[in-house]
Length: 211
Image (cartoon, rainbow, N blue to C red; front, side, top):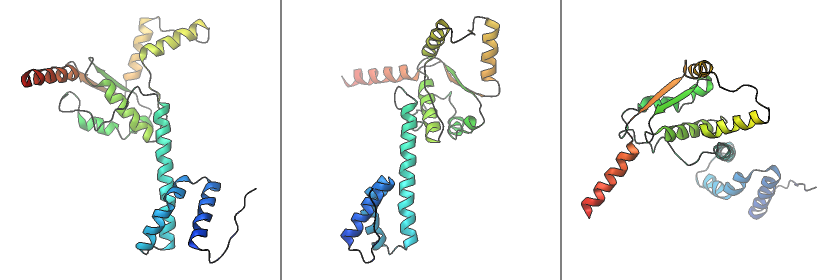
């Protein structure tokens, strides 16, 4: 078993070695990595002992929170990275930026309310869902991205294995489920005009003009 011995009047080199060993034992990789830089900054700014300790602990906490967010985002299995910052609201006036940024606070997740996006292909549904899902993962919620086709396949496979006893064969039952999903929740209509197509056409026109 490895133990640490306390000594007063350690040299700078011995103190650095002791900090490194302690961080390894306590599994504090961020403090271990940032300690030399933060120690120099603390000495330069004449920081108090309490202030220096607070800086070290906050650095570790912030980095752990970042790593947890990265793990949740990876576990969500998003097909690609999308952010709200990259969404072109001007290209799709059907989407209200204020509503989307309110959804980004994840209060709807906290309250257990559904979110449905309706619109034609190329109007930003997937972009917004991935971006809002990423915000939810960063806020500490577990997220899973899946396609309806994949979900249906999983249901069919479960039914074949007699794991699932109820399938949506009744149109009235299906309508009731959809009504339940949308009632009291957030319904975003992204429109019918594909801005993805419009962007492609604009690029093609610009290319022809330059040629």
